[in-house]
Length: 205
Image (tube, rainbow, N blue to C red; front, side):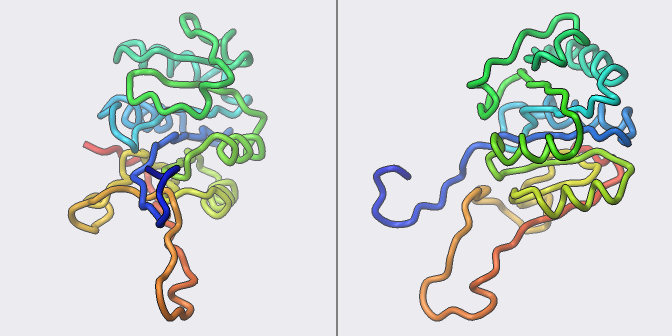
């Protein structure tokens, strides 16, 4: 429909959503957020599809992540840097990084830091939902300001990108496009909303 339409189409588009686990993350919180994002309802658009892990905490975090995900029946597909730290993961293929699984499959990538995480999200994300887990406000605010997504979260699950959860009532869909005005335009019509959520480890029940 989007390819053939001759008028603008509002798409309830795919959610290729990431959680970035920073070097200053609370790893127990990061684990809870990853589990909630991936397993609470894996077949929805705000489910987690990939976890990016800072190389300084990868050795401590990835075995915990694998064990917890295995208990929930989640298959891990990992980058070359993550594979040696995981027992049962399979290699992630290059064409998978922008895929929405809507299933109990999770990609894992070890990154050198915030810069690489931001670059990865900019390349493969779908502008749906992106989250950072960190105790470092400077890293968190840079992530919140620079990531282009309809909702960016600090220390909260991607599952919160939902009209009802954000206090908007019944949801029609989640747009990953930026609509424009039709008719006379003022400052309000030149502005697009971007949702920002600050958490303390909240998970969606």
